Length: 375
Image 1 (cartoon, helix red, strand yellow):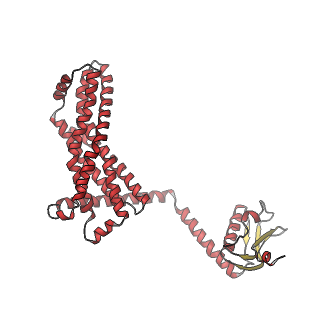
Image 2: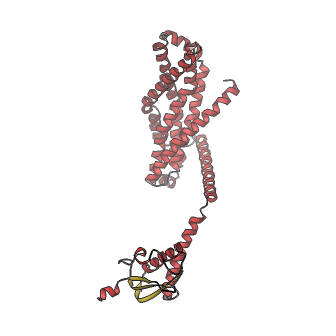
Image 3: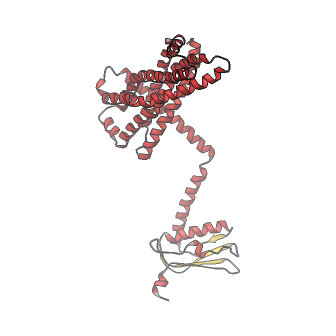
């Protein structure tokens, strides 16, 4: 037998009438090959105990305790006992340390029960809610301090926000508002035709577009486009530690980054909503002229008698509330973003989802409130 073979790590199991003997020997190193548990242990064992003994064991590192750890797992699966009393004390101590760390990691995983997961989710939700309320409070304070400290506000972001929420968003808002208005008018005319009231489609579509569809379409599209852009820009600044630099200079990130964008949305969204209303009303006009044979002058006359100024004002008031929600969602998620590319993506997704959910929730609250107020 060569000297190299004698130094090589080895493990051999022998079964007898008593305990099975697992002999380990040679030199065990992580940098070199050593026996694997599948190569050494049999599929079945005759007794209920495996005794580990050293034979020509020269030296070892953590590779041998890791091998013994796998032997212990094999014994647990086959209802056998592992006996390491014959091993050197230093090896037994190292094995016990590794075993303790493994058991501690396993206990942490076991303790992650469903109730604990629910508790952690509730705690995270409470923390996020508290942070959101704090952010809203900082925004209110910043709005009140706006006349006194105008220099702390990033007005370049205000103008870029107006461009994002205005000219750049008009094509997609106009197209989708027209398609939604067209579909709504078509379906409404089909239902009203059953009762001989198909001409009432003009009034029903007009009121719905100015009070509901126009503001809602403009807000949802701005949440998916402009709100996401706000979150991405602020999250990217946080990733580059630019926000930390602002705080070092004594500049409040909410005043410098969030408020200018929200003010830009508040200034722009009424005009965007009116544009959405006008594009949306083209859909019923097409249905009235093409399907119901109503002249355009008759359509406009009927629309004028049905849609009131109150309907238009209600839609504009809704749009202002939606603008605040979009701005809060986009800037808040950007400021809460993690400092990683994956965190930036999650911030953008969260901004869009939060913004749209808030818009729909607010719109649902508007209906009973307006009815109670007589609008």
